[in-house]
Image (tube, rainbow, N blue to C red; front, side, top):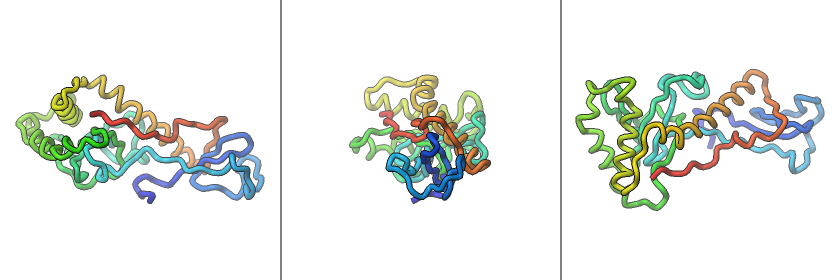
Length: 223
């Protein structure tokens, strides 16, 4: 089912030895105006998956979204991002100047990074308790919030490192976590947004060769 928050579905088809992206398959090729009725199998249209997820349907995951607005509408690649962590019911725990928030809405268009490998039921059973206990410590009181040094990212990464320590795993610093897990996702998001907005303006977008990067493969879990 296509969520409204994810925007219109994207379609890719081949014609005139080009890959053409649009929101639907036109009756005529936008390049040569030839009828699109009969196509070879390799020219059949395919659906392009979007890189967004409804964060409230994700368990035990790291989420990111624009601080203001949504990825498809307001995000420009330089906008501030807000991050949080979901419990097993899709409630998003996130740290702001008002302390730890527990959001049941507002993260419907997010980028998600799973934090648990499949089958880690023991840790999943304890996840909500770990997250709640961690969030009620004095470190995350409202007056301790600092926009640049003690913020939503500090909160999520500190929790992730607590989990890694519990599992006997090596901790990650901010640069390592960002480069390995966050940057690959935001790159895919930026490519998708560029494509989506170009189609909104022109009705289609043309490339010389298939862009394999547009579809986002399943991400690996952290823990």
